[in-house]
Image (cartoon, rainbow, N blue to C red):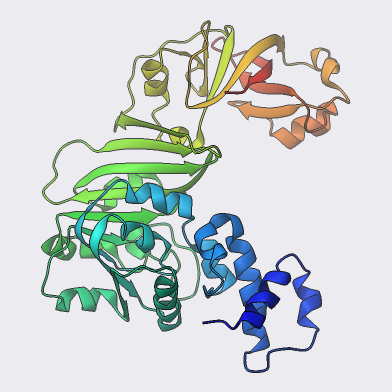
Length: 389
């Protein structure tokens, strides 16, 4: 437990310049100065991401990097809604944020972490947060699982995406632990495996490397894809489902499930009255045509993943009222010169910054401009007003 004076010192310096604090004399010689500085930085990082941990004065934080890499509470809470049962084991627990929320859904939770310092911190924090159904273990979690004489309702792991040289890897077989090699063993201990992977991982790569893939979730927070979740089910042989999830600032959740393969038939149209841009999690799954059919919308072009309609609908993404459509040329773009405008490009040869520089358009304001290609292969600019819901 942190003494009151140290707690106050950390809290009083959360908004101070850490470089300036570092040059001051350590007022708590019983603690390493570098450790105190890390507590300040890590707690500040946790303020919005981990409010439960931030609010507890006795919580101890690991490195700033560990806090940056851990799941946010919002994502952990959502994941825990997907499963429940008697026993759960996390083979790569880290700071333990996910485990705390799974502990609300499972009677018995096993926390496993190869880094001893992280395991000690997590155990301390679970006690401070009054969580009593989590058993912690430090060491090789695979060996630990082999020696446990029990099965689990759910096995969870988040393989490390760096190799021994700390370089990023992009295939599951190159991550640690290697879930590709471990699949058969894991199914000896459970019927359901949940794997968290980075959003950069390609859906087709997942399906090529893993078997018995029941569902793949693309989860976005405030329209930024944060992670992919892969659900493996023992003996599952049916077609994989793809689920897009977007969690908004106000707590509203958009969630839709799509078949693995995108449909071939879809409607095309010139821009109508309204324009729709899907959330990033929906685009990540690649079912661009199915999106249009599911919400009864037409696409602007087979490679332009923007949608249009004459009637306004509740759509999982940004919605706009089209105010003007102009051909893309220097003469027409004069009307935006030296004005503020939010620019988006879809199926367009120039990048946003190139457009800004070429046509002297400033960032910001209430104008929204989509630089895109229509069904006639014309380069156009759609000027819109954003619809807030």
